[in-house]
Length: 271
Figure 1 (cartoon, rainbow, N blue to C red):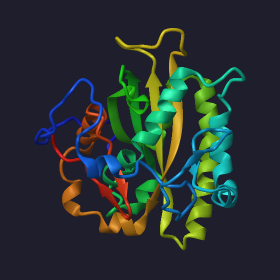
Figure 2 (cartoon, rainbow, N blue to C red):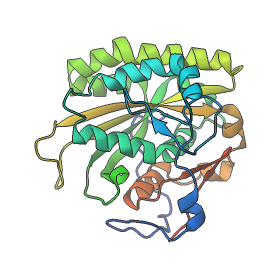
Figure 3 (cartoon, helix red, strand yellow):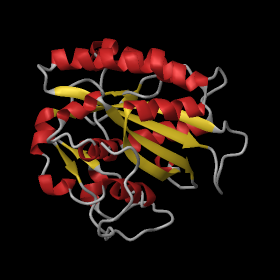
Figure 4 (cartoon, rainbow, N blue to C red):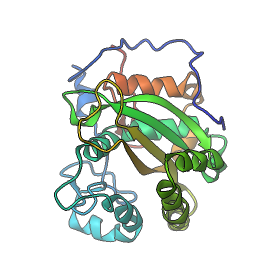
């Protein structure tokens, strides 16, 4: 696993870069779901409602929400800690919306960046880390640009968190990561070993030419991503080729998130 984001040495993407996008004209792509119900093994993507406490999980029914509560509670506790009595800060809301819109793109990055088809055990040793800064965009889920992204080992991640401040370092060391490992064990046992969680850490700095006035200088978000051995095994080896970091950057820059499509991922078509 590399200790830093890969520099692009592959053939450049054929997707034409644009400063802002709104709609693609590709009806099959537009109609594909961004995400499914958050309950394990529920693939309903209709009439989803967000968790009213943390606004991070989405459920298709009260029954699914209740049955998923024990699994969701650690993430809910963590993400709801920063919600203020007078409302969610804009920086945090934009990051939450972004993490939902690009859910399938982040899953693809986990599969490729951690090489889960051939090295499933990498889930034990590291995570995908995405560094972002604000940008203007008509779509609420696309108001970030990626500065850098890479697959990092756990010691390097802890060094990053330490550099952000002792509060971040201690929160992740003592609370977030231990809870994540307990939830991984629970999912592994309940799925018979075919399902697990990958770690994605979003580090958003309120900087750059389109920084948000009056907002906090930094927002960090932890996102566990469901990964399944059968999906990793079925993922075409050819799709591991190329620069996955650059692919993710292009999807975000062009507002062309990948979409979930049953057991596969619907890849955005080139423009």
